[in-house]
Image (cartoon, rainbow, N blue to C red; front, side, top):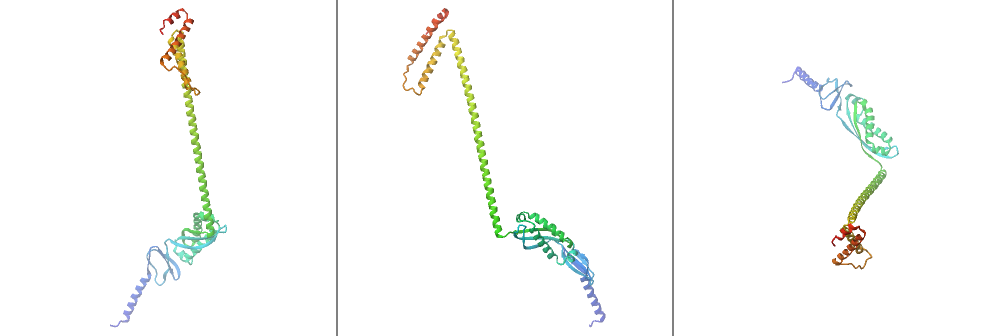
Amino acid sequence: MPLLGSDIFVIALIALLILTVVLGVRTVPQGYNYTVVRFGRYSRSLGPGLGVIIPYAESIGHRVNMMEQVLDIPSQEGITRDNAAVTVDAVAFYQVLDAARASYAVSNLSQAILTLTMTNIRTVVGSLDLDGLLSHRDQINERLLKVIDAAASPWGVKVTRVEIKDIEPPVDLADAMARQMKAEREKRAAVLEAEGQRQAEILRAEGQKQAQVLAAEGRRDAAFREAEGRERQAEAEARATTMISDAISRGDLAAANFLVAEKYIDVLKALASAPNQKVMVLPIEAAGLLGTLGGLSEITKSVFTEEAPAPMRRRIGEVPM
């Protein structure tokens, strides 16, 4: 059955309507924003989800990634303030906050951030000496972040982080630094060893001093005790002598005999212990020693009999021998 003109018109109209709906509905994925241009001029931005544009009058300009992105900065050479050539690697993290400015304020956003970062890295490297460049990476990162973020702010971009990955000095300079580090560590090791020896000597001297002090205190206490013992012995001997003198004055010959015998035995002991004594003749038998003591007693009796008054003589004569 041939189609009439009206049927063809209806079919064309339906196809046009379907095409219009397809062109007017846009689905924006999560993490992206689409810019909408009307007759070549920016109109608005579409967020994630289902968006509607005017068919034939509006179109999608740019599909902008709104998630945080990483930008690898290629290696580049720089010269420090003390004329040392170094190779620096870095990485930058940024996030688009305004899709319109990121699309129309700068031609190539990634290339712009890359060039800006490389330029500022060379500037920072040239303002520091090699030691400061190697030991203050955190300060370098903060300085780069502050400068690059301020420069990229008109583009609707937030630079979140800038990190220096690696700093490579020349090979000869690296060798010199390694030797310097080794020498410094050996120096610190020698200093620590000397300090340890000094502390050991001090502790050893303190120990010897303490030992000498304790030994001196021990000798002092021993001398004090020995002197005290001699004093007590002398007191005892004096007391014994006094008692014997009192007994003798009362006419007690037994006390006199005891004193004479004690002195006699002490003399014998001294003669026996003399270092230059080779031969000594002593009365070994007990009877001889008793006879000697008896003779001494008779002598003492005769002396006291002659010197004592009459009542005392009678008392002496009564003492049995």
